[in-house]
Amino acid sequence: MTEMFPMRVIARVHSDFSSKFGIPRQSGLVNALEATVVFEPAYRNSDALRGLEDFSHLWLVWVFDQAVRETWSPTVRPPRLGGNARMGVFATRSPFRPNPIALSAVGLAGIDYPADLGPVLRIRGADLMDGTPILDIKPYIPYADCIPQARGGFAADPAGAKLTVRIPPELAGAFPPERLEALRGVLAQDPRPQYQHNPERVYGFAFAGYEIRFRVEGDTLTVVELRAAEEAP
Image 1 (tube, rainbow, N blue to C red):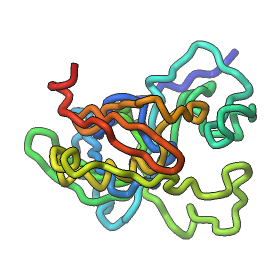
Image 2 (cartoon, rainbow, N blue to C red):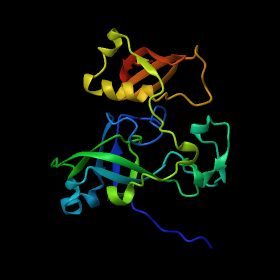
Image 3 (spheres, rainbow, N blue to C red):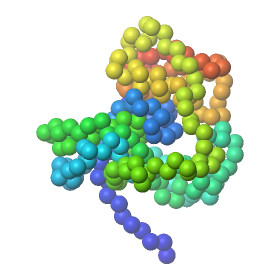
Image 4 (cartoon, helix red, strand yellow):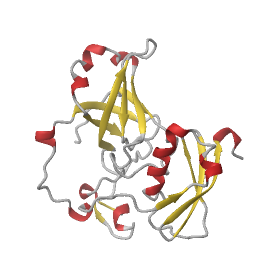
């Protein structure tokens, strides 16, 4: 008999990503990405956060709520390997797991206290979709959580920026300036599926209330259309 441990959603993330497409494949890759963590009513107690402001980073324990399945597979195709090689699910961070639980290290930019929401965490570098349920929050402790000599297996090399991003001035000027650096960072990571590298294809995703459409040729990504979501066809 399989044991079950019920979990409570304590908070939800509010980010610029309304869908999975475009989200960086790990936390911390795009520090300019800003998001908030809003607690559920039962957990809007500032006492629960006492001392948290002294930490620069947090661990978020969350649920892949868009990838919940009744069954699981012992092997998956990691994007890092181009989606062509299979690895054991427990050797990856794939969302398709027996328990769809994830862990992300994020920067803590501050804590706000709006009257209608209770304490709200402002975070940076999150790889979470808007509305993602949070199960727990823990402080990142450098002496225990950072292991410089650790081996990274097939993901040992940093997944840094891959592409040069070109956004024509007339399009960049139509985008909120406070979100432009984050958009460039997201695009530089190459948000395309690993198995799709057609230079003629136009890709698109929603970000910060805008529809972003782009094409990639070689190592250069060019934004070809950028419009507010309510204007998109």
